[in-house]
Length: 282
Image 1 (cartoon, helix red, strand yellow):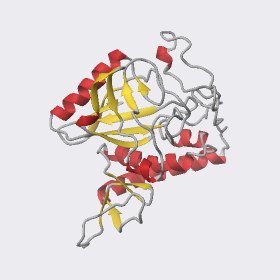
Image 2 (cartoon, one colour):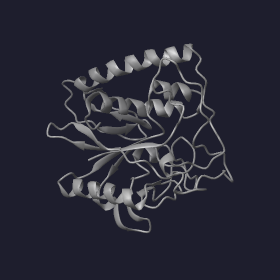
Image 3 (spheres, helix red, strand yellow):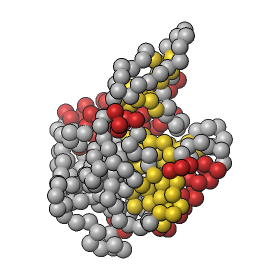
């Protein structure tokens, strides 16, 4: 997804691009060579733009960020690029990366010092989280959901900090605090409050989502299997164009399109088809 800032400072969806190929399993990248794609909040600056990529054009996601480093995650050259081949990157095809790269470049040339990437395993809806409640990454995804909720509730880019090896969103000094906030990614979090206007709107969404999530658990909706034995996947619009690109994992049990599960009658989007999702805010 590409989101563009309007005249009021809020972001509106501009265009959705299907991902041609991603590798690995649902869940964040942990180590070099694990074929995982990053999940989390990343900042792209001009030096991360690569017009001379071996995959036509490329945007470096900025992995590892301060959260990744604080949690001893490592890896390099995790890109959004052209072609339709991935080893931990988001391969978009040459045609699509041409458009995405142009939007990113023009955003930076237009005066923005950077833009934000929000990378998720899937849409962080109550239905999807309930489906994946047995996944060992559930707590991590719930933390990402807090930042996503701030964005969904306000359409404003969340301010992201890291302390105590956790993401913190839209933090500001406590009232009457004389000192600016200083965040140490591996240290204790300073005293802070969440921007009240953002917190109020996000809390309304979170309460509604928690009620739905609890109902889904009470209904004992089927849990998605953690692994399917596939090495990554690709959006179905590209399956006919690039046959044979989704293969069985040779070393580790990677997942892609998890088996379809029975629908949840009272939820429109039952989340039975999982896929990587990232959004860029220009």
